[in-house]
Each structure stands twice: as C-alpha cells, then as structure tokens.
Length: 389
Image 1 (cartoon, rainbow, N blue to C red):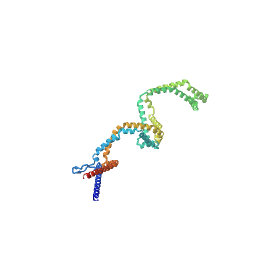
Image 2: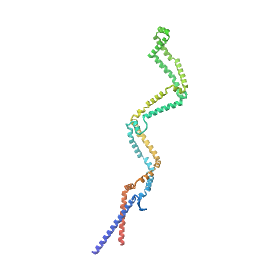
Image 3: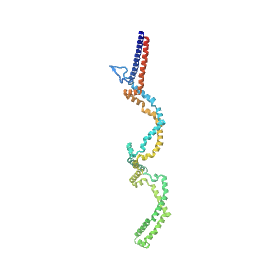
C-alpha cells in the first residue's frame, strides 16, 4: 500500500511537472510571438538613455517606413496597377458598356432641360450671349465690307466681277428689255396710263398757246388721247424700239463696267448700306430667338441618334485612344511617387491600424501557433527531464 501511494505521488508530480512546463512553454511562445508582432510597429519612436539608443527602438515598420513606402510604390506600379492591366480593363466590353450607360444617365437631364441656351451658357460660365454674337456679327460685317472696299476699290467693275457673272448680265439684257416693254404696255393700257396720257396732251396743248387751244377745240382732248395711246403701245412693242432700248442698255452696261468701284461706292450711302446689311443679318440669323428657347428644343430631337449611334462610337474611339496613351499617362502621373508620398504621410498608428485591419486574424493565429509550439516544446522538455532525472 505504501508503495502504491509512493507511485501515485510520483505520477502526480510528473503530471504537474508536465502541465507546468507545457503552460510555461505555451505562455513563452504566445507572448514572444505577440511581442514580436507588436515590435513591428512599436515603439513609434526611438528612445535614448543618455547618448545611447535603446535597442529595437523604434519598431521595424517605423524605422523602415521610407523603404516600405518605396517598396509599396514599386509593388503597385510593377505588379498591381500596370499599364497592361489598365489597358485590358479599358478595352473590356463590359467596362465600355458601363461607360456608355453612365454617360446616357448623365446626359439624360441635359437633353430634356427646360433651361434656355442663355441660362446654360451663364451656368457654365461661357462668355457667349446673343448680344456678344450680334456684336461679333456686326464687327464681321464691318471687317468684310472694309476689306472688300480696300481690295476692290481701285479696280474697275469688269475686273472685280467674275466673267461668269458678266455673262449672266449680258444674257439678262434682252429679258430686261422685254420686261420693260411689258411693264410699259401694261401701264399705258391701264386706266392710270390713259389718264396720264390725257394729262400730258393737255399740258402739251397749253404750252402751245392759242394754237394749242384751237387744235384742242378742233380735235377734242379725249379723241386725241384715244388716238395717241394705241400709237404709244405700238411704239413700245415695235422691234426698232426694243432694239434701241437694248442698245441703250448695252452701252450703259459697257460704261458701267469701265467705272471704278470706288466711284460707285462714293455715290452710295455706305453707312446706311452697312446698317441695313447688319440689321438684315441679325433678323435672318435670329440669335436672340434661338438662345431664348429651351435647350431641349435643340437637343431632344437628336437624343436617339446621340445615344444609339454617336455615343458608342465616341466611347469606342475614346477608350481605344486612352488605352494607347495609358503608359505615357501613367508615366506623367508618377503613381509610384504618389503611393510613396501617401504612405510616408501616414502616421505609424495609422499604418498599424491599416495592417492590423487586414491581418488581425492572421496575427492572432500566429500568436496561437506560438503558444501551441511553446506548449509542445514544454511537453518535450518535461519528458526529457523525467527521463534523465
């Protein structure tokens, strides 16, 4: 019985020793791993005893933050956000469809906007308005008139007019003669023309004094007017009259062609012509009326063409151009330097929070693994102690 009690005591001591060493090993393993993880970040700054720096201060990451920032920048540019990956993303059909849909949603309010063009120009701070454009139109007219006057004033009309135009005028002369004859015939056969002939005959007879009065009393005014009117119409329609008129017009046209343009301009009310031309252009263009209409009046009819045809083509060409420019664009952006500067601007506490936020679970597992390994090592040590004690 005494022997059994002694063996039981030995077994109890052995169990206590094993458990003690396992617990101590687990604590040492877990605490050292946890301490090692903490020492990655802490302390945040170096500590000194006199002139001597305390070892392991600051922590690894605070001490190597510059190198870490540089390596992160290199990793992002060389392995994460590379020109090839961006080009692949940009040229992806799904990405292009997303861009098209996004642009459709963004432009939808614009196509149906009830704001006027003037309001949109003002909202976008574009220095364009109906007054500005009207003034520009006036200045353009002034410039064109002044330049044309300077360029052509010393030339004769036949030099300034194209031969084609001169030929048109030559062809129009016979038609002009016929038109004049027709208008004259219509006038003299009308009641107004008959009355005018009668008045002219009366005036003619009055100017002849007593002879005219005697002739008028003898013939009678009405009979004279009735007899003269058909003769006037015959005279107008006579080929000889039309030939005379045609020759007269040709001579006048020949004289006009030899005139210098400055002589013609000097006889014209230039300022009135400019003002009238400007007023006619403003009325014809109607800038104020167009700018006062809602933007939807101009854009809504073209929305389907824009979204269905133009927008996909523009996105396709735009993404293709952007993909070609990505390497150069990334070089201009200096992404590596941006990442490096951003990381260096973080406080060590912020870096610790970021890293732990991503790897907190893994760090805990490392701590638990250290405790497990420490416990196993303690168990092995306790076995060796019992074997060699």
